[in-house]
Image (cartoon, rainbow, N blue to C red; front, side, top):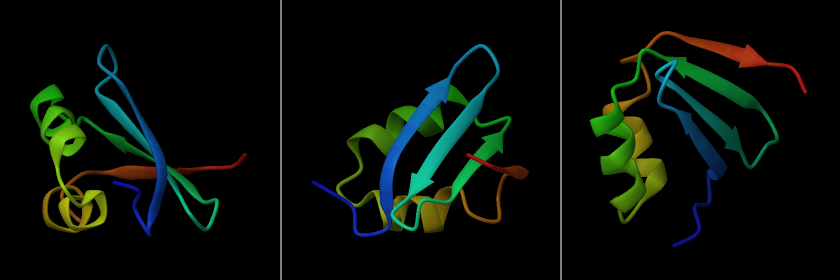
Length: 66
């Protein structure tokens, strides 16, 4: 199901980094995200709700300039 908040996301397992591209075209990398969190996000019915509950304010992040 498409998200009204998240355009796309990608996970780098080696670095444990979750990159999220928001519909506003801002890009953030969330650091030290366990693979199990990413796996749960992939199957979440609402990516935005999952993000707000389990990622936002839980992991360190950096903004990526594109």
